[in-house]
Amino acid sequence: MNKNMQDQLNALKLEMEQAVSKAKTDNELGEIEVKYVGRKGQLTAVLKGLAALDAKKRAKIGALANLIKQDISHAIASKKAELQDASLGTLADAEHADVTEPGIRPPEGHLHLVTVAIREISAIFEKIGFTRTRYPEVDWDYYAFESLNMPPDHPARDEWETFFMDAPVSKKGKMVLTPHTSNAQVRELERGEMPVRMINIAKCYRRQSDATHVPMFHQFEGLYVDKGVAITHLRGALEYFAKAFFGPERKTRLRPHHFRFTEPSFEIDVSCGVCNGTGFGADKQKCRVCKRGWLEIGGAGMVHPNVLKAGGVDPKKYSGFAFGWGVERTYMMKEGMQIDDIRILYKQDVRFLKQF
Ligand code: FA5
Image 1 (tube, protein in one colour):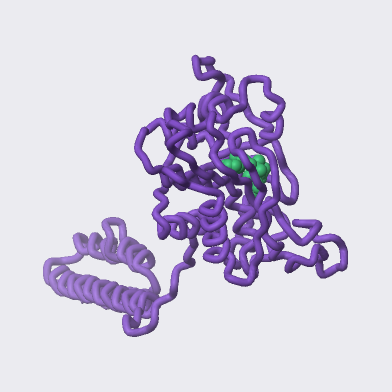
Image 2: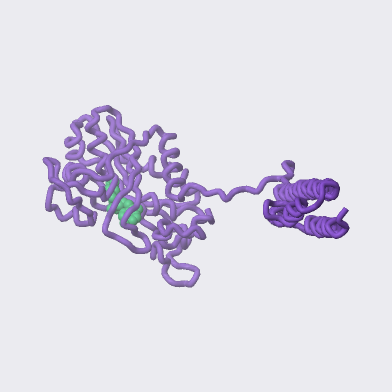
């Protein structure tokens, strides 16, 4: 046997075994395989040298070389399995989950304050038989003004600081972004079903922005029309709402006012929840919201005969009351709210919204 070749093979075996045992990744093992037992590998090169040996030596050295090749292939395979086991162990550790542990709550949002207020207001009025309706928020001038006893060019319209639509004009006039929910009054009467007990809550738009005004806000409009409806019913309904929404402590008052679509007309004030009706803030300055202890939150009155007529209702037989309040202002006056600028409701500042 060629002693030299045998030593060479044994030395190669030792080198390969050490390389395999040091390997840390599948890639390294792949490289070792190529380097030693691949087609151009070192062991393969030794085997190629066998041709030069005589038959007897060739058989012995060949057998040894094949044995080494097998051992190395086994060593590589078992190292691969070992590395895989180890990596699965690491994965199992990393992904270990104890299903009995309490879970982690995902962050939860909540409804916007205005949506909460709308739901609460609807529920309060539903209890006294008012049904929530929906009417257009982009409507004809006729429903927003003319049918409400405000003919075109009437100065009373100025108060509503209206956005007009750049759209074709019809028999019912221009289209407007509804500046109040009163557009629902004649639309509801036109349905011709008596009695009417509607609560219409919708978006309104006006060219206004300050601590108590936003250009897009919501109103809730009540309309009650039946035989024998009197001003006492109006008072009763508003008192009921104010107590249900603000609690028994808060005060409301009616002030005479003028609306073209009600007669008599009133404005409704509620004692301010920001300054507790004192008119002064914690800094001893005038309250930013009300300035005088009371905040106007809506208008009301007995439905004008011309409005009943526009809706096809005979004012000699029927009478009714109507009111329209701002949802945001009403909500700002709720116990403990302390919101001193209406615009914050629409700033989408999560730090503010999260507090409720
Ligand atoms: C009206 O809009 C009448 N349509 C109310 C009415 C209905 C009277 C039925 C009689 C019968 P006024 O313009 O005062 O009235 O608005 C009513 C309420 O809407 C205000 O008191 C206020 O609470 C709210 N409001 C008005 N403009 C804004 C605004 N720019 N931002 C926030 N709230 C507003």
